[in-house]
Length: 479
Image (cartoon, rainbow, N blue to C red; front, side, top):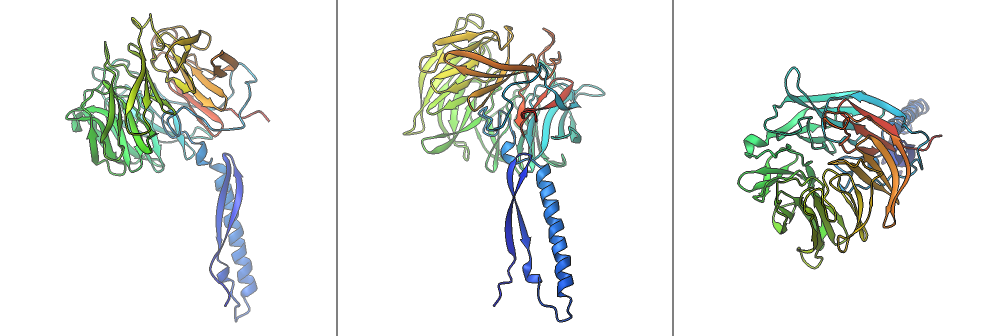
């Protein structure tokens, strides 16, 4: 008997993000002998339909980048500041990058995120009333797709430019967390509200001095937020689909640092740097596996994200210096390797990081000190290997965001410059530098403004924002 089940062909198609596959089901079983003699005409019509379907599928695939190129959350796909794209420009051809597009927005500190062919960013306006907004743009054209706005009055918050936390994208959901604790789950395609929480009302959070800033983290079915709520709700896990609380953990104060997921001793571990501890939790249950004290000597100002390499975990703060922990691999525990802290934020020892998250790579730590000094430390001891003053302005809170791509580092400094360089124990090697976007004074009303927001890298492009606009520039080699 003839097999009349549908036959499937897997057709490779080269789209803008790389090779993808179109699966076409051709119902050959419908091509049956027709007693009325119409078989040939029906076959021709069906083949025309199949061909049209294939063409449309290829067209749709070629206009949509591959998901492996997305930048769906704070510091990239794995929150580790690593970009795996290949085929990028070796050096810039001019001192200013040519923009693919620019889109008007208002002020804010949050960096853009990119997934599914869309770019998301948040901002704040004060007229006609104080409002936070979540924007969604088409990645190729910068065309506005949707915007969600909600009233949000800032109370007792320093630096009021706008939201801090980057939008987190998880397939059909996007999660935004505002400065005053407004947590939204929105439809990624339409901006429709699926659910929302007011953390001030629901969890009686104590809003930090500089606002809620820790980007939400998706862990399987859960959305994890550093909230700083009352009654053991510093860290919250909610069902990402409906917003119901699943667990809560720690009585600590909230910090500004984003949580991460790591592997330790054969387990997935949620690492949270709060205002009082570096803690390792079970992401499914909230059980505390370990916690190491890191109390602030002046105020909670833990901003940088924890970084991990192998069995080492590193954190660094503006006033409180640096801490290196060893992640035990025989059990869920940590040990202090070293702790370095200078007399103050000017007379520093090792590294006193502020906004910039350091890079832990092999036997060395690379990071920016309190006044913009780019430094290399010996990861075994915390001793300084070198210091450089050419990449970052030598100013209080001088900032550069570093993203590793192969043996190169893409570095976006607060002057709006994008730098291609290399970092090694021998020093900082600048390969190329170009202006991407202008600094603005909304984020910092001094020194002619800054660009403090972390850029996104996706589809061989860079996406960056200031207080006036969101821009996109092509980083592929010129043809």
